[in-house]
Amino acid sequence: MPRELRYLLQFDDLCPIMNWPLWEQIEHILVAQDVRPIVAVIPDNRDPKLVVDQFRADFWKRVRLWQARGWTVALHGYQHVYVNRNPGMLGIAPQSEFAGLPWQEQEAKLRQGLRSLKRRGSLPMPGLLHHTRLIKPQCVYLQPTGYR
Image (cartoon, rainbow, N blue to C red; front, side, top):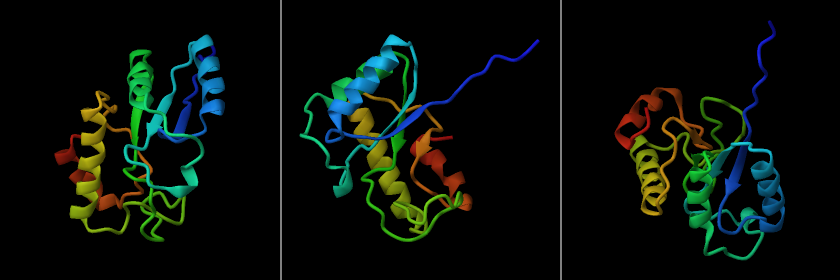
């Protein structure tokens, strides 16, 4: 008997100033088709490349709604500002917000990002930490931040 196909769908860079007209079209399709994606949220976006639309004051309310629909909320970095040219352990992108920084700085950013999500009523799924490009030996230090 053939195995059922399953797909993992993740949307990155969600923040209050993203392309809302485009996202609302995507969200409508996701809801209509009962698709439950991973939505990777930037808690404190400071990346000028992601300033696409007007600030949406209801963004965090929307994040809580996505979570209530069964969507998975992931922490997508903290401020989405690349601080160096270190690709981290995955080596996918040539820059990072985290990799190569002293662990104390990485932990502070992780804690701030998690605190920001929790303060706004959203609890990211443990283990879904995206866009950090951590260095492998430092992954064991995620435990104090609540990630395992």
